[in-house]
Image (tube, rainbow, N blue to C red; front, side):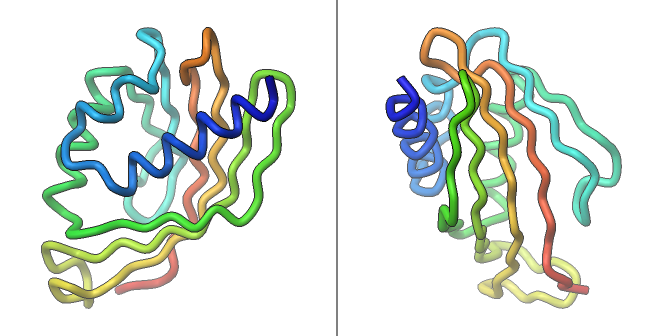
Length: 133
């Protein structure tokens, strides 16, 4: 089961990276999904998102980014939870801070995915962005 959950989490990250639309991500989420993003450079306050919020955020992300890449550095499974440590690189579609269109920003992510019935029911993101202002 642990290998299956790791494979699902890796497939989710691959889909996130290569998505053409937010709809592609929806099949990974349990209907009762709750995603928590803790404060970081871009998100000043803890933000809790439900399924529709995640869809809107994914659509917005495609407007801000030309491309995003995830390099999974480590992954761990504990019970029904997969923990991923990843390096994220986003290529901007709009200018942000001192980064022009086409420039890149980087972040070190730790993501916790809790599963129910083979779907992500709870996700916690700890995102550490490298300076870009």
